[in-house]
Amino acid sequence: MAERIKIVYIEDDQDMIDLVGVILSRDNFEIVGVREGQKALETIRQVEPALVLLDLMLPDMGGWEIYQAMKQEPTMRDIPVIVITARGAPIDKVLGEHVAKVQVYLVKPFGTHELRDNVKRVLGMTS
Image (cartoon, rainbow, N blue to C red):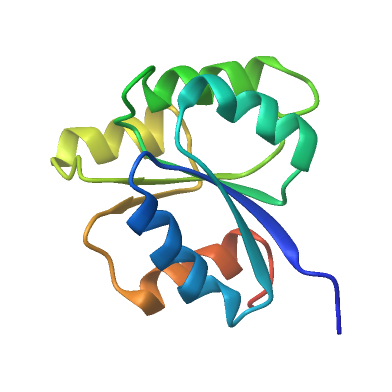
């Protein structure tokens, strides 16, 4: 069996972490959930994931703060990021995709196939 591809999911809702873990486990992904922004950067350094899934609304710090910190650190700046958020206003999506330049901006609730397809595309696993 091939080694599982690690994804760090920064999300304060454990049920969401579990759900995404179930959805992506079928494709040989291992989800490492982090529920606090402060712990997120430390976890990314330790795990060295292929991808980060990032919620924008966390209790201790904003998702954009984590994203900015990742982009400033040489060991993390090239890790792709998919934002998964309840912030679905068109301006939020424009800011995410065109200003911050995240790979994908997914709005909750999202479909199972939408999540799987975007993760695979960002990781170069689909044509």
